[in-house]
Image 1 (cartoon, rainbow, N blue to C red):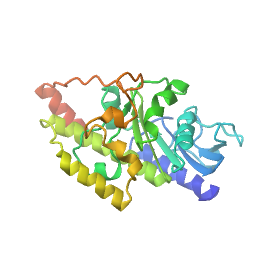
Image 2: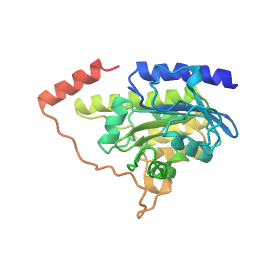
Image 3: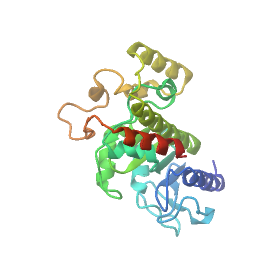
Image 4: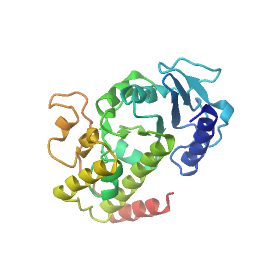
Length: 266
């Protein structure tokens, strides 16, 4: 994709993120890797629904500006992904309400409840909290980027990435849709997990179909046994997600309100 096409695509996806309430105000950021040493990124302090092609920033893979526009202060998370994943050419970071609700509750999106999610996305782990725009955030992401295509960042939001910007956006949208379904199912009494043998079949299907490669088998963590080992995290790792694992109790009135909010959200 040439630079002109990339600029148009970032504007289009930025409007979608804003219209679907995945971001508000100047939240979120989007980028495309133009070539081996140039990244086109959304500008700092700008609403994603009101950007222009001329407002986009260009940097190198170290974050050094290559034009007169200032990139998002959270560009470092994009650059980390590009450096760790040569197969990735686009990144979307946003604060989708249902996915972000999981992150502030200290929960990963890792329950095997939807076959389509296992086929195309895999589980979405929760990283430890890191202050946005600092290396705390990127350090918390490092253990997970290699084996996962989307992450929840504790008390922050979500990031998804792909071979192109549409794939990155689709993965973010799948994350949000799954989180919404999970919240609704919990309100209705709880979701039924797929059986282990069905999950293994789905993982084999996704590899044969090319949805995800064998290197992504770690994405079965949370579904199968020895999840932490699969993620490269041992028992003493300080990089484990800080899920509190607590059960959530709701009154009848709270349940009704939660269902109403979920049904009315876009």
